[in-house]
Length: 161
Image (cartoon, one colour):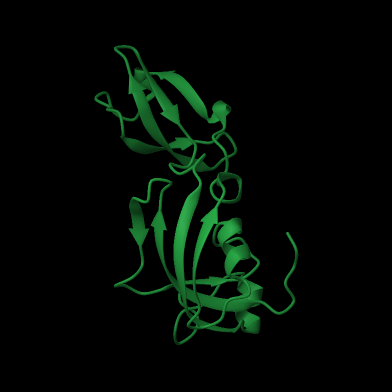
C-alpha cells in the first residue's frame, strides 16, 4: 500500500451493478458513503478510479474482480459435517460466523446441503465478479490529523464511532 501523505475524506454516492446490469446496491436516497483515502476502506479498484474526482464529478467505473472482492479462492470452500454447524436445519443461502482459525470469525454461506454434510463458502459473495459502479462525488476535504491517526474518516461534527 502506498502511503498518501495528503489523504482526503471523500463522500460519494454509488449504484453497484453486476455484469448483467442488475442493481445490487445503491446509496442514492440515503447518506453518501464516506471514506479516508489510502487505508483500504473501499475496494482498491474503486478507490483508484475515483482518486482524481472532485465534488460534483460523475463517472461509471467497471472494476475487475481482482481489484474488487478478489477471485474465488477454492480453499475457502469446504464441506463439513452438519453436526458441526450452528443449527441442525441449515439451508442453502444461510450465513453464519465461523472460526477463521486465526482467532477471528468470518462470515460463511451455505452453498450445498446433503443429509450428512454442508458445503460452506468463506469467499465474499461478490468474489470472482467484475462490478460496475455509477459514482457521484458528494464532497471532498483534507483529512484531519485525528482521522489520519485513527485510520478512518469521522462523520459530521467529529469523532463518530
